[in-house]
Image (cartoon, rainbow, N blue to C red):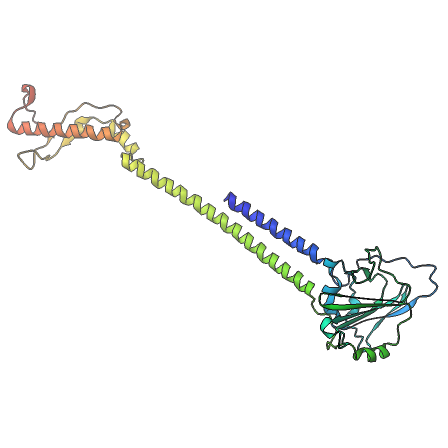
Length: 338
């Protein structure tokens, strides 16, 4: 049972290690709406700020795994106010005081590059949005978001997609004009309501697996305890049966020891052979047998008891036979009991 318990504990430790390793590898503890970068103090020397449109289009909300892929050091915030917006329909929010630049992110499948069709689009302020990215040259992990105070454009290909970043210091254009333009460039997904992403499904799956495995481990542990208890009970019963068999073999009867001790002290004069068979006749009259009282008879082993009784019986048979013939050893006269 101790070996089983050790195996169960090792299994639980391996399971927990795998869970936390997976969580650290895929950064599962970064949920939508959690901004990993702290807010940067406003630059007092910046005389003007800009207004940026905040919206998503196409299947951008389904690309969280691509834009938060920590395996390639891609770190990007994910905000809840993107949900419900649609750049293709002109349904947008505004970031009125953007201190750095407005950014537009285009995501395009490699197979659709030649067709100039984009899969997804994001428009937002670059403040505290991206802190690290392999898609931007000379990138580094910064305390705050990557800042560009001039117009810049970068693109990179990874995981089967071409990703383009456009940073602009100008205010965003009218949302309706942009929607008319983007409808021709971005494949519509019908709705931009946030759907479960791959990371979310992975989190739910891992939680379900952890709960199921924990239940199975607890069940196995409980069954092991029951089996151990039943095994102990069975072993005790087996030992008792073996003990009884051993006592039966040697002729030892525990329940009759008290009676044997009481009857063993009685006189052998009370012992009478009634109708004891002899050599020549079937039945014989009752003959009292006088035998000396043997002390501590109950303490003699059962084998010795049987031999003693056999000698007594043989002597009684001999005396009964001699009584029939009228002869007794040593010339003794027959004793007749009235």
